[in-house]
Image (cartoon, rainbow, N blue to C red):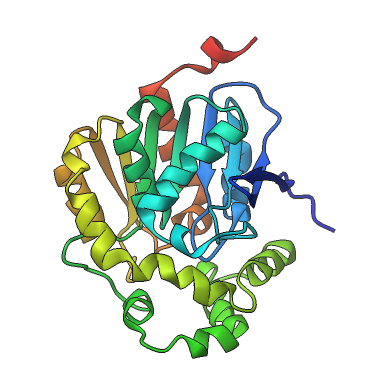
Length: 281
């Protein structure tokens, strides 16, 4: 029986059922965008630490986890705009935002368009460079010309990904089951549309990076072979208010080294405010 602190629910945003979970704590609002191919449960290992003095809202972006989507939303700029719609639907005005992996590009587009909505951002392990500097399996997924393998073998693909998340120990059953359900059937193949848009979307992102005013901490894994650290270094050189942290970890830092990940996030929140005391009643 699961004793997870994460209790998902759904809200309708622009006609789509979007899954989210929130903590009960009062404090500054913090929006956590689930990475791919995972879900809101990716933040379970760091949830208690992050929720101690902040109100957490974890969200599955459209088409990821168990949120509904439309084809046009599988792209960073569209996903970034949808982040703002989710905030509006949940009555959240301004947040700290944490967007690892696919959230990296979505967060940067959102911060570029609406900087007043974000106290700070923590991103990383997401593709960013122009031209692309990515490893496997992302390269294969971006360049695949036939998606039938992924449409018919999602469970096999996800089993391989899950083995990479926790190579030394298995995921808890409730998290493993959620990840498999999140990308079963055609859902994995559909979600590939996001990374397959990178060649054009990241070129557009490059044009706005210099104007991002939000303080951004970039956290990347030194051993990440899927999205090499060169992507984080690329962003650090171009974002005017950024901090680069390279962790001795693989791609899935938030699950492989949650204590370090939470520490880096909390430190950034403390540096960029507001303080928890200012928002408590």
